[in-house]
Image 1: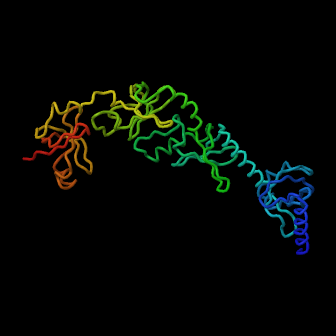
Image 2: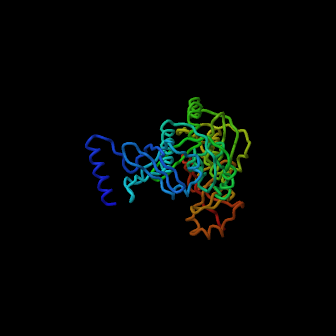
Image 3: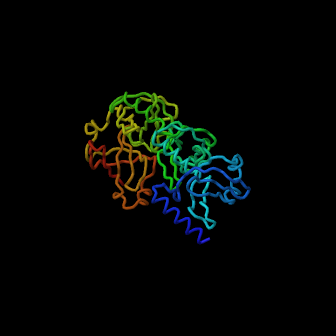
Amino acid sequence: MKTDNKYSILMQNLLEKEGVNIPKTGDVIEGKIIALKPSIIYLDLGNFKSGVILGSEIKKHPFEFRKIKLNDIITVKILSIDNEDGYVEVSLLKAGEEKAWQGLKEKMDKNEIIDALVTKANKGGLMIEVEGTEAFMPVSQLSSTHYPRVEGGDKTKILSELNKLVNQTLKVKIIDLNVREKKLIVSEKATEEKKLKIALEKYKIGDIVEGIITGIVDFGAFIKFEDLEGLIHISEMDWQIINNPNEIFNVGDKVKAQIIEIDKDRVSLSTRALKENPWTKVEDKYHVDQTVKGKVTKFNPFGAFVKIDKNIQGLTHISEFGTEKKMEETLEIGKEYDFKIISIKASEYRMALKPITE
């Protein structure tokens, strides 16, 4: 056997000197089936050597081999140039896999839209079958139609929404591919890029749009207008501090909003911008050392928010109490107390208050 291997090496060296291209491990080549047995398949690899597909591959994947016939030309991948019996060990399945990945790479390079089947959902996104190859779609890459808008970002509820997409066929684009790591990332959102780009060309910052509230989450509300969808962040809903977007909007509400930012395909909107800014005239109504009545609306680590009229809220700092516990013992959310105004910064929309204690 050693003599045979030595002879094979000498033949390869001779062929290389003659300028003949010698396949190597990892190459994908064609071969003609010259012997077909249940436990082994022999191939003629042309001027190179004879190849062999071992029984372990045939036994493990019988359905892949049932249509193969004697004299068929098949594509295989070289696993070993010289196995212990002197044959070139090849794989039909590995070649198919290689061909599949190459096809996917071409589709990614061409920016093609592909039909893909959702096979499974997890809290991070969807498992997708793309032309027989498993891929992953992160939640962030779902289209606006399928993106799960779950209040509070509850992961269990997100998973429940994602599970509704299992067994559905989605149109996707490949956005990342790594053959070595067998990693394939797809995006549904990317298929809308051209349509969104055209739609966005109609708009600029400052434009006022009218749309429908399509979803409400803890950080804001989504609004759909024409073929676009934007976000009204909770801080852009009103001049007063909003604790929950549901205080302002309901799904299905028709609203007007102003575009305040366009970043690629993301549109940020504001309903606050369409309302009169109460802070422009705050110093006409209030002044430092004035005593006012205010209702406590919220506690946070910095202090207590206090609503002194319909549109103006101030803050009584935690330092006025010493500790959060003391603050919560002194004040109660929903109750009115007397406060002294200790500073007004209208340009920063801030008013500092001091509780008046008997």
